[in-house]
Figure 1 (cartoon, rainbow, N blue to C red):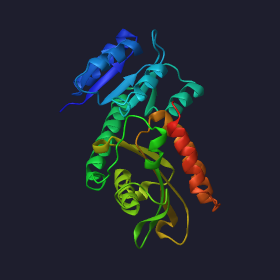
Figure 2: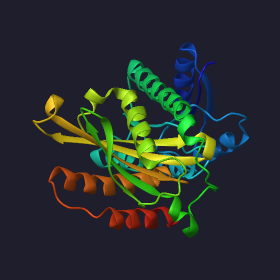
Figure 3: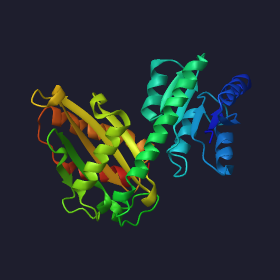
Figure 4: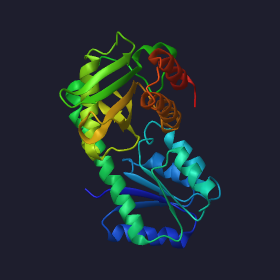
Length: 294
């Protein structure tokens, strides 16, 4: 089935050129002239788009506000999002990246570059969907009653895991909190499966710098934010000790992942510097973040 792409731009010539380019390359395309119109288009669709390409500078509603609306909607917020804009200053690009947008392409752009970015994002989306399918066996045993957001009484269903790769035994759970998880499956098994599943996206040997992933667990409408990193260790194969910090929660949105990445990067820095860190303190910080209305 051909992937469906929503393209949003207030410059009609550019909009039509992109539409034609994508259709020639066997994509299905729908268009809108600004953020408000795009939200209306999304609300009327029978199927969600596989990817969104949006300009930034638009009347009615600009690309930043449109992205915020998309990322806060439980039906759309996992859709890959690419900014396409004439804004090319470092601050503009940095803002797009900080918001969590998947990629940023400035005008004028090369058609081949746009097609390559779109193809790459769609391949990653398919891989993530495959991972979710592979995780069903282990995640079907979760007996959690979740809703579209995290309330105070759902904090007990938030789990943080620290998993380290061991050359002899594979992924090893070094630490987790809460110590008595309310998940029905052993937390060690969950950590092992998540580590293997995410490593399958790139291949473990290719993970040489910090990388974050947000997964949607379809069958329980839950989320997992995974943060991979490594540090030099001459005693292990490849001289890189790889590890994973993982957060399981009923609901995580893109804006929260920006702050989550900062928190997990802080933990990772302490791990690399071999400094002590209190997992309970960080769990409390994270649950406060997730229960705060963003």
